[in-house]
Length: 386
Image (tube, rainbow, N blue to C red):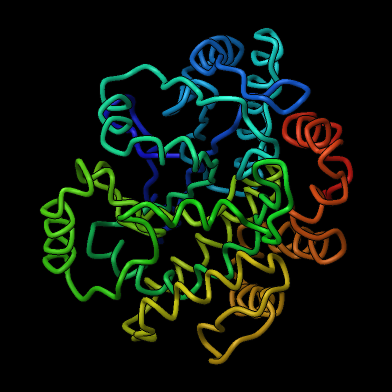
């Protein structure tokens, strides 16, 4: 929901030297709600994160979120789609099991489908309390869960170059994991209601096209000077450089319905970053307001929405834009043994639709049970391509 990395370490991603070249690595962060069978929040996030961590070998990155009815997981540094799928599946399974011990269900959805009888308590941590005091009741009216993808880059300058290219891809990336059609007990008519709620934060939204690190630092300083944000970690641009590590982070997506869809998102974001860092080409300087409007359209329609075509110009259906991206980078995806994974999962989305489509098929009466199974039950992945 928010960036609280001063409370605990966040995922680190990097570039690794392999065979004389470089390979971009990724890390994925996922946020989840804890609810009961009727869809009401269950305030057991800290306990669920602690118990979940005990069920995973090593030092898994599982932690409470801003609100006590939410938890977050993060992979380690991943070099392939398969690694992302495996780590997310293990982390989700651990959290889901721990949630059941606390009388809760773990659900991956961008917004809460059902009405809530009251505000959820704030989680532990001094920064959580500062944010809550600063933002007020608005915070509780816009509870959302997202999926953040970090891609390792050399430095802030490289992250900004990647962001300049990614900003025009943001509408298309919304459609991949659009997974929040219900909010407050009704169908909003949007595939990603989370996007509309999240964009209300004063520092959220697509960043402007930035020509230098100095220009970025001036922008951050100006945002801080307004008093609307408390610190640099509250610069919630939909794509941004990380302050803590050499990564570029996308924050545009709803939490994915399944680990495989999250891995697809990660691979495609990594591919776009690689495209951005390859050569000296200039990227279209599309006005930020136009990008924002295209994001609204993508949030409304979900998978299949008409989105900007970063290389071809104009607007085309998102599946066609991604198909062209994959075709341009097919040799690299084949070398990483990910081409079949990407193509088959995109085809599955074409056939079955996005998460919003699946939620609507379940309906408000059945959506909690469907989400709980889809989120963490390994057997639910059997319907996805292998």
